[in-house]
Amino acid sequence: MKPLIIGLTGGIGSGKTTVANAFAAKGIQQVDADLVARQVVAPGSPALQQIVAHFGADILQSDGALNRAALRQRIFSQPAEKDWLNALLHPIIRQQMQAELATATSSYVLFVAPLLLENQLQSYIDRLLVVDVTEQNQIARTLLRDGGSEQEVAAIMAAQVSRQQRLAAADDVIDNNAGPEQLAAQVDALHQRYLKLAAKHS
Ligand code: ATP
Image 1 (cartoon, protein in one colour):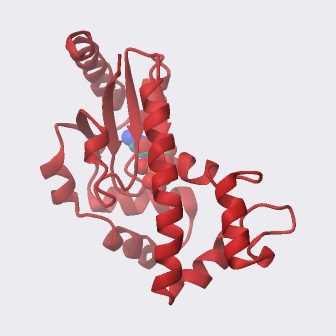
Image 2 (cartoon, rainbow, N blue to C red; image 1 turned 90 degrees about the horizontal axis):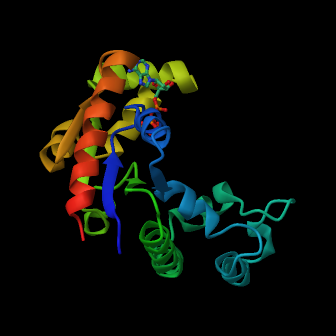
């Protein structure tokens, strides 16, 4: 039986990883869209072999892993190359995400996807959980974690859907503007709710 799938998204620095870890501590499995996208081009993978056959061996780092910066540069101003890469990778990534979601064994499963809305992955999920923080908190927490400049964070935020768009798409919202206790209480309440929904899910 296919498990109940809860999509988890939020903007940069909103607290997705923190929230996912809190659910994981309750035994809830997760599929991480970014991780899957990296795994399908791991050394030895068929997709990486095809990328090397297409772009040449200098698309690899000396350790045999994909040189992502070099690849980005190659496709940046060449739409045909970008289309080729997307046509290769998107079906493989989607198939892998679906396979992992379908075989999860916890009561329900989290699908953690920072760009869930941007990449239109709603058809993968039964319900959308959004981690919401103010833009000020997003910027402050990202700078505290990663360093860099406010302009860099603002540029990433500008490339993502807006806070309003995310909230409009949400079935459930975690307000992560306050501290860890308030976050834990919200995760507890949602976990109880999802367990009930999972029991009814078929
Ligand atoms: P990204 O999309 O950039 O990977 P994310 O949404 O996964 O980010 P986290 O890494 O979970 O976000 O959180 C961003 C930063 O904010 C981290 O350093 C985290 O420890 C911190 N943080 C998360 N929740 C809170 C909170 N309630 N109060 C203060 N800091 C928090």
